[in-house]
Length: 291
Ligand code: 0GY
Image (cartoon, rainbow, N blue to C red; front, top):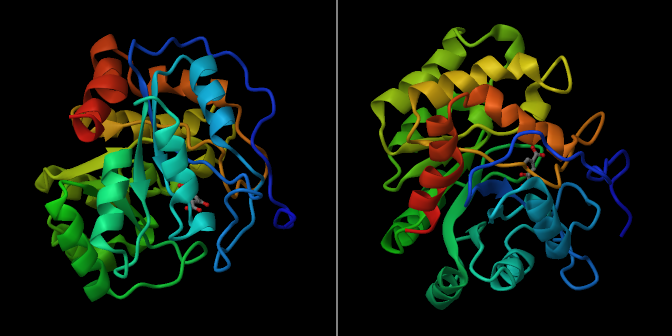
C-alpha cells in the first residue's frame, strides 16, 4: 500500500546530537510502523505511513545515546498491537509499550501484553487520527487496566480540554498527557488555555506529561526555540512528573521530517541542569515503566 499523499518519511540521516543523555536514558515516546509485509496497517487507519521497523528504531536509540524505548501503539495499526509487541520482545528488556485496545480485548491478551512489557493504554481524542469511542467504554477499559497496574496515556488538543477535563480527572490510574497537551505556541505560556492545563497538573498529582513534539507546535521551525518556554515551564514546575521522547518516526509531519539529533539537543534547553535531565530522562520513566 503506498504512503498517504504528502506523507513525509522520517529523516534519513539525523545529525549526532551535541547533548549527551545521562546513562540509562529512556526515549519514552516513539513508534514502530510495520513492516507492512509482516504487520499490515489497519483497514480503519487514517493514514498510511512509511515502514519504520524495530531495527531502525533500535539503531536510532543507540546513535542518539539512549538506552531504552517506550513504544506507543500508533493509530495506523489501530488495535492490532502485534508490531509493537514484537518490538518489545526483541528489545532484550530495553523497551516497554503502550497499547491501543477496545473493550473486546480478552483478559489473557492483556496478560500476554503485560508479560511482553506493556504498561499502559492510549486514549486518543484526536479526530483526524481515530474514530470516537464512548466514555462508558473507555471507563470500562480503564477499570480493567487499573487492575494490571497500568496507566493511561491521553492524546488530545488543548482547545478540547475544558470538555474532556472531568472525564480525565475521573480516571482511576496514573494519567500521562501526550505532547504537553498540545499548546498553541502563538498564544504563549501564560495564556489561560495553557495555564488551565498547568492547574490540572498542579491539582491532580496522578497526572504526568510528555514534554515532546516541539516540531509539531513550533512556528519558527528547527531548533524549535519558540517552544522552549512551554517545555521548560513544565519541567521546572513538575520535575518528577515529566518524561521525554523523540516521537520517531514522526507521523503526519506537514512540512519536513525533524532531525532527531536537533530534537535531542532541545532537551538541554528545557531541562538545563543535570538534576532535571536525570529526572526527565532516567528516574521518571524508570519509575513509570520499569518499577
Ligand atoms: C504522535 C502523533 C501523531 C500520530 C499518532 O497514533 C498516531 O497515529 O500518534 C499525530 O499525527 O499527531 O503521537 O506520534
